[in-house]
Length: 142
Image (tube, rainbow, N blue to C red; front, side):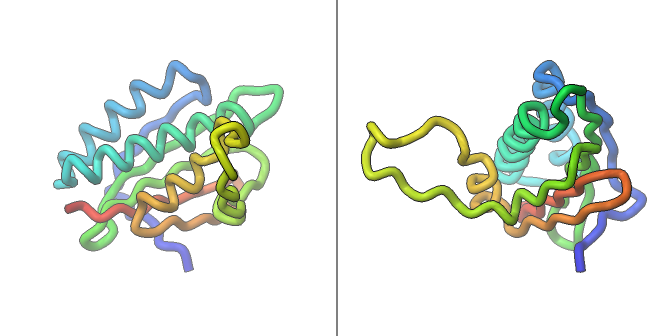
């Protein structure tokens, strides 16, 4: 069962465009610090959210601008960040981690955002609702 953030969670609505990345990062930093997150947890949440929003912008809603909503709040002693988008169903947690490149010449650029997110967060949860995709990132606050 997926954990859900309560009604007290802070919300931010965004357009799926590159210009939303900086305001999103600023909002996450401000709200996460208010909720008592460490600098390390804040940096991890910012990085992961930037990776996810970049993926939504690039892949999530072909031919139109995605609508994205962030919800940030406490989940017990941890911090939860829900990233909601109205794109087609896509479970990023079902994507296999990329195979390591044999060498620098074979390494490809990109494709590591979901793997990075899974590595930095304590847990990640995905669910699909009638309105779209919901990916919940759960970070330790210390």
